[in-house]
Image (tube, protein in one colour):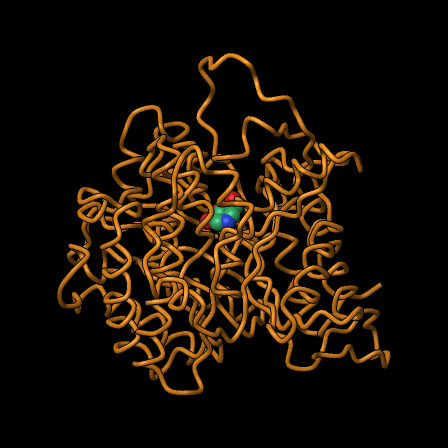
Length: 472
Ligand code: IFM
């Protein structure tokens, strides 16, 4: 367990443990652009974003921040931030364009250059293998509800590990499989845009299986020193009241939002209440012998992405079976209503609530003893503009990050083994169905010229990193 060094360092009020990793994060489709270069084929996000009405303003990731061509400049930006680590994702359709077969060397070359540049700059690369860009060919064969996709993922994981394993120390199989399964296949607001709740549950299981098979493929190809992980967007679920009904609503959301991944991955089992809640949709017979053993391969750490809490209350299931909006909560949606948490909100309309992060970390400390934690994403979107002085003043983002770092510090002081913190995101980027309308970056990107301007929050974060903590 990590302990906080309480000795006051000059100028630092809240010091983080020695060796704490300070990073920023991005994802391939959100920043790279170069959608058709060097053999890359369309992913489900290319198809989805080119479908009218799916993404705000008809935006696509075709050019994004043009990181593919400006990678050296972006590594320079990170170098000036002083980050110890950079979390990026590898685009599956760049590396294995059809989702099967040998690796495309030209696609891998981009990541070889990126990793070389990072190491040269003294930044530790942390690679995520799947941040939602499934090769379209695999979706055409059934996508994540189809078991073979998990096998394909393991093959792809092995190819990337063979190519980069000698230089990448940190590996994450999947980013936020909840979003991939339930926004992609149940509510349909993410690619591939399907609204099939039963298929979404199959997708969730196959993502767990892909994760486990991927861990095995990584371990087989990587040196023993490599760290292997999974990143979940865990929901900090709060019942509105302590009534039995509201507690049960929270339990349902916890089951299909959190334990659908935590139980297979850390306990090698399906959550029994999840199976009951979803019985009208599936009998889970797609879970085969050995799947849960695979899903529960030991990990070196768990990545936690946190933005805001989820407040829920109970509702009586509607008597009529009228048309309902597609929901990302199969088995729970009829019983639960979501309420706005109080307090200030970000440009995403998400409440700013650092206590939710503390609650999550305290829970994981208690439920997963011995599993180190890394905050692999935390950050906020605001309507940032380059001002007449040429700077981007973003005091709300600084306040957001500061509040959440204080929560992380409090959790560490209370015994949570948190090893690192990655701001989402390095750059303003393609925010999925919101296109380029939401700016999460520490660095402002002008989407007409691709000019980068570090925001005030970037300078502030550089200071936090330099002093190893927060100044009063
Ligand atoms: O931009 C996303 C990221 O791709 C996954 N986690 C949440 C971020 C903000 O919505």
